[in-house]
Length: 292
Image (tube, rainbow, N blue to C red):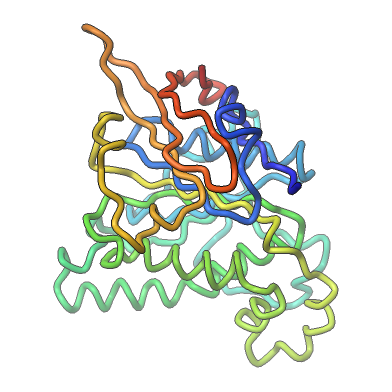
């Protein structure tokens, strides 16, 4: 049986029958401030013990600044996230050298603005977003592929803002691309996409640095309109959207107990494994999310 990937979150692995299945997509859904980013960072940090290398964070936030990942990591694990510069030209020389640094964190957009869906943008703004995205794809491939060839097996994709139709979101377009064309693609074909006309001179090195995409776990953090856990649980899943296609779906939301509010989570789906169907409270402190 394939070894599970621990989430790094106290109590959550038990709910998941031992952890997450590598080679699959896990989607965590909840409102802003509910603890998704802390959970994602705990999953990434758990790679240090399990795979001997920390996972990396790919931030899709459309705000002009990044989120608080570095501050969280410093406080939770006393770890420093090396930030990759998305505006720096991709350096292909000595790409496979052991000393090459790709960073732990990439904020892919610096195109400021909160609107990320086609219905909220006029034609020129939508085209500008697409051009901005296309200009960042090579940096995205380099960051993800470089970390994968160096042994990272955990990818956290954060910053997905709430939308009514994922198909109209620039962020979901980017996620679909990197998930299918980088994380789940044969690594030698990813190298072809990255090196392009320089592939032949790098083909031997690429062949020497293959990895198994079936061992790569991906956690996608999605911000919801809904705040209450009951509302998240009752929301319909549209056939073909990212939530319905995920192997594992975890909802995080607020719950009411008398005159007090709390936080609880629910594993709505966990294909290929038994899972606990209880609604389970959790708490957040300086060390992250703790379940139960």
